[in-house]
Structures are given as structure tokens and as C-alpha cells.
Length: 309
Image (cartoon, rainbow, N blue to C red; front, side):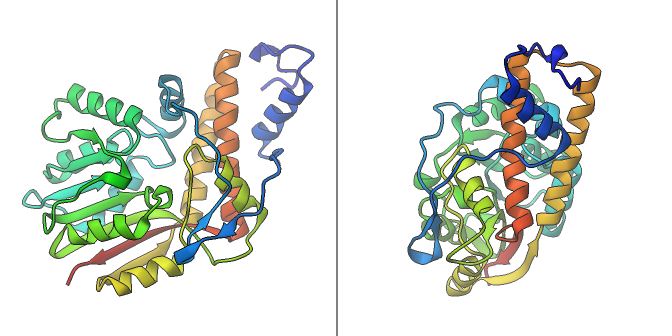
């Protein structure tokens, strides 16, 4: 990227914007807004200061940008290879009933059907993402075999004893009532059914690094992460068998950096218009906050697999 920002259409009187672009481009520290210290809530749940999310965070422009960064049909640092590896321990086969919550654009939903013959019931809490995900399934000829519908986390009803496998992908930390959501998921498992959870958790209660607070207030939705121990305690209290709990933070960090490196190469080859750069800048700062929180050790991204005896 040119140092003077000329190819980005930036005015000469925009030094602060150029500074932010330069810092983001070179991966150096970004300017973060001051944040109030989060307080500990009941049940080991930490809630940051509330900030009203934009009415439509996932606009068509942001969805298009996310796919340019992370890959077709992905809105975050995932990718087809990661999804395939994530699903491997579930030993999926066509006879299984499967519920997915947190489908995003439905990349995993369609993969589960095409690779394993499963007809998943998939839901996405964000209505904009759910609508695009369903359109992608229809375009792929999978509207009935791999549908994605919108369902709010707090009112989502799960059929008791209805599923061999249930997946909660990066939604638990946004749920206001985590015990209720997990209870519905556990109750939805058949005997010997498995529940896969991927999510952000706090290392411990109480004081934590300011970078974690910056991540909390900078996310588009209100985030209320549990501690890892609170999740483990809930699993034990629910009578579920814990098979895997793995810290994926390093892997997530590598995927974030790999995605942005590829996108920066695209920018060098063909600089986009200023409005696109500003959107990319906001997305880049969002993921820089996430990496800083992970690097602090106060935030972790983990993968959990439990089963119902």
C-alpha cells in the first residue's frame, strides 16, 4: 500500500486515517478506545459495558468483504479445511440426525450433507446471515437437504431426545442465559449423542487484561463469555461425559493472520475504493482486538466435545 494513501483516494488532510491504515497494514498496535472495567456477574459470567450494536452489522457489503478475506461462504477465520477437521471426531453418517446452531453462511451445513450424507437442521441467530445462507443452499440445489433458518438464541426450542449430534459454533458467548441454552442442547441429545461446542471463554474470573475488555466492547453483538472452568462445571453438573476440551487459540490466531495476509495481497494487486478500505479497516481492527485478547492469555478459543451417557 502506498504510504501516502493516494491510490486509496484519501484526502491529504486525513493523517489520522492514514495512521490507522498504516498501523493495521503493518500489524502494529492500533489505537483503542478507553473502556470501563468489566464487572463479574453471577454464575461466573462476565459482562462488559453494554453498547448498542448496529441494526444491521452484516450488511451485504460486509458479507462480501468477509468472504474476500476468509474464503467463499465463510464470515470468519474458518475455511473448508478447518471445518472438515472440526467435524471429523463426530463420525457423521447418513443415518444421523444433526442440529447446528451458529451456521453463519452455511458452509459447514452444506459440507455435512455433501461429504457425509447428513441432512442437518441448521439455524443462525443473525437474520441477515441466515437469509444469505439459505439463498446459497438454494443456489447449490440444497434448499431442502441443507437449509438454514433464522432462530434467536434466547427463544430457540430444541426437540427433546431428537438428535444424534448437536453443534454450537461460536454462539455461547453471546447468549444471555447460557445454562438455559446448554440445557436445551443437552436435552436435545439422544442417548450416546454428542454435543460439539466451539467458543470464546475467559481464562479466569475477576481482573483481566485490558485487551480482553477492548475485545468485549468492540464486538458487534453483546458478548458475555463464561470462564473455561464455569463451562466444565456445567458439563459435570449436567451429567454429561467430557471427551475433549482443547485450546484452539493458537490455531485461530494463525488462521486470522493467514486470512489477512491473503487479503492484503489482493489490496496490493487492486486497491479498492475508499469506502471498501474503511470497512476493511474496521474489520481488521476488530480481529486485531481479538488477537490481542488471545495473546494476553485472558481469552481463549476452545473446542469441546461431550456426550450424553
